[in-house]
Length: 198
Image (cartoon, rainbow, N blue to C red; front, top):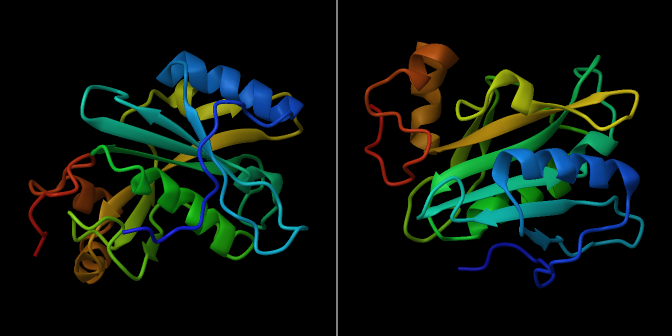
């Protein structure tokens, strides 16, 4: 299933000094040789969005995706740091990474992507899983210094994790609270085929 309109992946990153500094720091965390996916622009003036995709990272059978472009905006809920999104899941399906670029392209300027926020995707991200929503949070798989990146701008970039979940779990998450939901025995930050939390 191809939900997203993206240009074919390329190895060459965009030429932008802040992006280059951002990528240098990602390399120290996730390694080298990523793919760069670009959502097709609806309008020529649409701002830059790049999805940096690492296959077999952090381990075999995983895929990792990180956006660049969201932090180019300003938002009242970002007094200091500006977010970029990341996802790490047990899957080889690149749509998990592409989903981040889709959300940035559609929601930038309106959605702050702050910790504890619940985002309905509207349809399963991939055919083999029933996950159709995301929970925004701090990356459980990164150290604090790895998730806050200095790119030499007048702001820092903070990586915000998107944890796949089911829309049917949203009410439960709201009732339990963000921290309790993450500690539920059926919650697994990486397993997109985990049991539904009821």
